[in-house]
Each structure stands twice: as C-alpha cells, then as structure tokens.
Image (cartoon, rainbow, N blue to C red; front, side, top):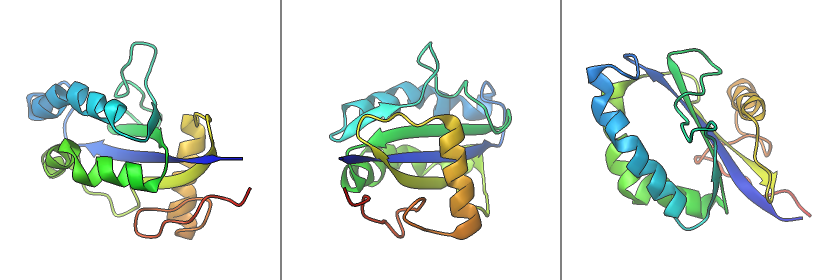
Length: 148
C-alpha cells in the first residue's frame, strides 16, 4: 500500500473574515489555492460544494481550517516554505491570533484517501495531547510512512 501526507492547519481570526482588516488575506486566497493545486505533489484540498474552504468552521466561527493531501513531506514543504505561499504567510500576524497549542498536524493516509474534518481535528488533538508520534506529527519531526 502506498501512502500520501495529509495536513491540517488552523488559524484563529483576529477579525471577521469579511472585515477590512482581512481584505488582503481574502484577496489572496484564490491565488494561493491555485498555486497549491498546481504545485508538484498536490493531491487534494478540503473545500465546500462551492469551492470555498473558509466557509467550513467546525472549530467555531473565529477559526479557519485548511486541510490537504500531498505526495510526500518534500512536496508539501516546498509549497509551504519555497513558494509564494511563504510571502503571504509572513503576514499571518496581521490576520491571525497566536496560539500556544500546535496549529498544524501532518499524518500519513492511504493513497487516494481524502480525510474528513473529524479525522484531521482528531489528529491535531492527538499531536497536542501526546506530542509527535508516527500517527500525528509536524515538520519539526517527520515520521516515515507506515510499512506496507
């Protein structure tokens, strides 16, 4: 069995998504999402039936969730840290509040699997509760995919 890397990250909004303070963030969403979808190794991203990921708020109205699946850690890392995504995320303090808990989690899924929000949130909770393990980890300590 082959595996791909799933990721979930959360961000706590400082202001409502339609506020002037978040206008630049919202204006860049479509381009950043298109960049991800065109990136090498991209497999899938969470969005509603209208193609909007910011409408999904399982953790409360003030918390955005982003979930996607990638070929492997290298392709996700390249998108996150070596693309135009980096420029936008340098501004995250303008739009999002700080959190002491982990805000991103990575985990391996069988090839072709699209995780549910419940699955992603459970992985984030696992990372927050137990620290990095082969079942839920971060870029600081990446575990290999499960043995076939």
